[in-house]
Length: 206
Image (cartoon, rainbow, N blue to C red; front, top):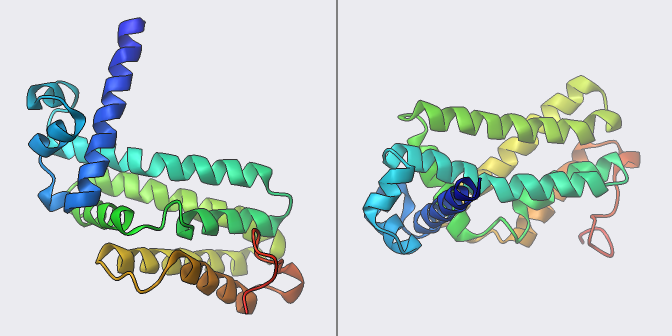
């Protein structure tokens, strides 16, 4: 059992190294050799844990999404209102913890591989389905289900669009600006009585 735990730790270290390299180099520039160097390991060790570059990409995508998924889940548990549940999803996707240029570069690089790699496409589909479900859990109590579904799709498109801009190197939209865009969109999309002051802010954006 101890050997299994050590193996799991090593595999996680290698996945994290792959994410770091992809943040810096993009998927096209990420090689097994670069990941091995980042992890302080040999290419042979890397191939012991991952059969090829495609499997490494798959695990890197899972690793890159894991921290975000956990933060969203924890925020949603603490939320006291449907709006706070909704905002937890938006804030964790566009807040400063996640919405950074290196993360955008890595994310867009992995997405670009999805059309050629069915497993990456499946993981991406799961990630989007989870976001949609989380958004719906906040929206449905605030409006009818059909309207909630449309708004959830619109919010997903807004978030994805902002991440695409970030991924191609356009840093003109800061995390704060992205959050303000999302909040203003909610102001014109939700019933007035459903709106709350942006969590973490002393007042609504000017």
